Image 1 (tube, helix red, strand yellow):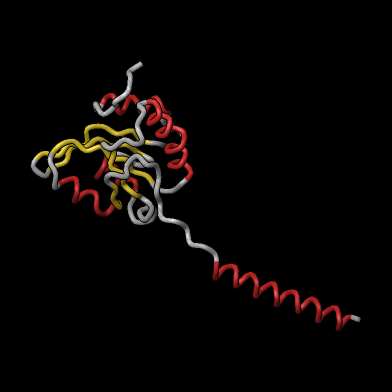
Image 2 (cartoon, helix red, strand yellow):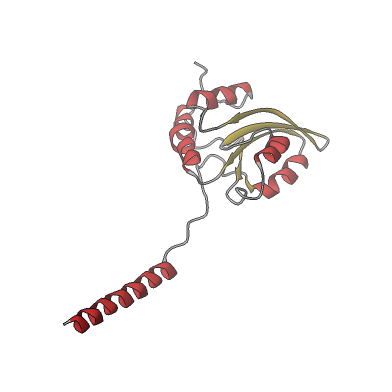
Length: 167
């Protein structure tokens, strides 16, 4: 009886291991990050945005984000309602900067030096003159001080890219 029980237990352990290994092998890979329809006109990986920005004089409005919960929250609960308020499908002025591959490579101090923020999601207004960039202002999300929909709207108003009514 013990041998029979041992054989059945071994069978279930081996078959369970095989099914688990097959599950891990065939599980789907995560989809690439596509947040919002708001920055679809121009979108960059973090490594490429500086070269793009410094090669074009003028004002640039950047949205730094990755696929984490905070970015999805900002996307779904702040940007979508703001886009609906201006009756637009997107904010074409915003350049989406994908931070997905940056998490371990770049320190918050480096982000602060380069772009004026230490955590993201973040909105950054950058002015470029003769290849020199100047950070005009930033709106940065932190777990202790998250921004709201009105903060994003005010950031857009301050940077003169808000197309809707000003309450």
